[in-house]
Image 1 (cartoon, rainbow, N blue to C red):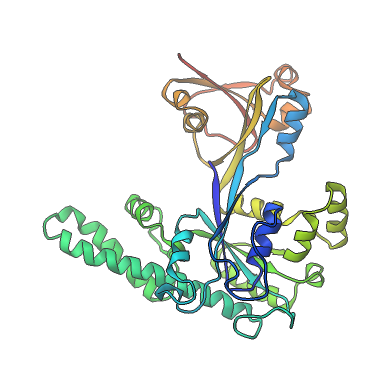
Image 2 (image 1 turned 60 degrees about the vertical axis):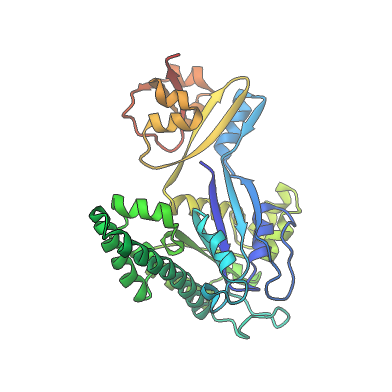
Length: 367
């Protein structure tokens, strides 16, 4: 499955700079004025994967296919965006299409870079974005309730959906995002969310954009973001978007050396991908078809092997017989499939098997 992540935040907090850093491109225009980004920028990026690279070194396939993530750089939101202020609703519609959100928060002071409100205040910045997204969802729910109240007169089966929408309305009116709603796991909510694509129902990752000095220690601004993230049960990734843009133009060796000097072990892309996988409960499994390809796949935890097979080819789901499984750790440790089998790491699994992170899987299916 390809993961789509929308990058949101106030104008001039570093969204486009982060987008360029994550995608190692200069696709998004960067300038010192609000609404520099008009149309959203899209880029599909390979998910960094050391295990995949090592598998490729052993198997030497014609192609190595990484799992991918799509980043969407969305114009800055301001107070009143839900009513069309700034560039408004056209950008909220782009947010709804994403699987998850990165909320980038400015945590550095620089008189040469304009802040849309004239002062660097992460708490206020986060609150503005959250309120706008909550109000946008509230508008959606109110319209849905109005429609359902008319429909339910002729179809009483819609009463549970109407009641759910009224509960969501009350929840949003309290200033609470839908991701904190207690009924998220119900089938009825899942169906409604699939239709409505609630913005505040998405998992969110906070990215604290700091200056170079801020990489070495948590500033008061970063600590405030961490407090908010902790209260919401999510994570914070701290990066310097400007440094990351410079890193994108360096060799791998130069990049790692500079990261170490700044006290960082991973690039922004690696940090964001790993945090995103944790938030969305994603794991990786691998398929091999020598000499053609080795491929990485992202799948949600708890997925059974038949559904995973369907991602590879629909016939694998329809005509599944069994799966041959080798943990990637054993595959690499023993130098390939033959060595792993000799060490007893190879096994056969049936259709109820739940895919584990790092499984190397070969699906057997009937013709």
